[in-house]
Image 1 (tube, rainbow, N blue to C red):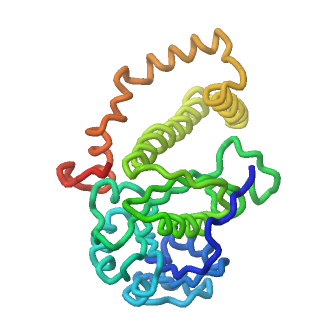
Image 2 (cartoon, rainbow, N blue to C red; image 1 turned 180 degrees about the vertical axis):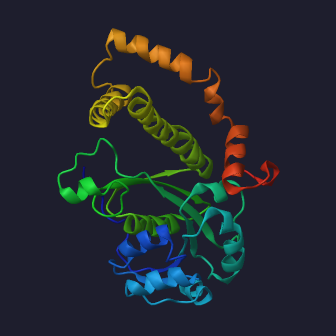
Length: 295
C-alpha cells in the first residue's frame, strides 16, 4: 500500500481549536512534525496542560483564527455550532474551516460566510485488510501514527486551490494517508454514522456480547472462545466483503438462521433520509426539526 504525496508543498498557517482534546492532540501530534505554522488553542485548564506538556505554545482562539489559512475545529459536535458562530466571523476572507465529523455540517449547524470555505474530513482508520509489516503498524489500530489509512472528505463550494490546501492539511493531520476520497456532505454523513457506526460498530459490540454469553453463560473457556471468534471474524470479513472463499453450505444455513433471528426485515430503512436525520439529531441531542440537511 503506497502513501500518496501531499498535493501542495508550500507552507500554510493552521489553527487547531480544541488542541488539548482527544482528536485535537492526535492531529496536533502530526501537524507539529510538518513545516506548516501551527497555532494551538485550548480553553479548558486540563487541555491547556496537555498542550503545554507537549512543548506547544498556546495561542488564544481569536488570534489563531485571524492568521490562519485553515482553521481545524477539533471540538465536540454538540458545541460546533456555538464555536463556529464565535470564530467564523473573525476568520480572514478565503480561509477554510475544517471539521472532523460530518454530523454538525450535515445538520446545518455551522455558522456560514460566503467568503469562507467549509470542509469536513473523517479518517477511515487502517483497513482490516492492510498488510502490516512492523510492530508499530500492528499497534496502530486507530491510525495517525504508523499504519497507513484513507480519509473521506467533503468540501462545500470551495475553489480548486482551497480543496488542494484542505487536502494538504488532511494528509498531514491524519498521516500516513494512502488516499483522500472526496464526496458530498450528505454522502459523508451516510458513511459516518450510518454505515460505520450504526452498522459496523454496533456489530463489533454485538460480537463482544456474543463472546461474553459464550463464556459466562454457556461456560466455554475464554481462550477457546476468543481463538474461534477472532479467527472466524477474519474469515467472515474476507469471504463476505472480498469473496476470498465461498461459505460452506452448512455455514450458509446457519447464516440464514442468524439473519432471521437477529435482523429486522426492514433494517435497510436506516439509509432513508428521514432515518439519517433522526440519527444525527439523536447524536447531537437536538430535536429532529432542528436538522437542516445538506446535500
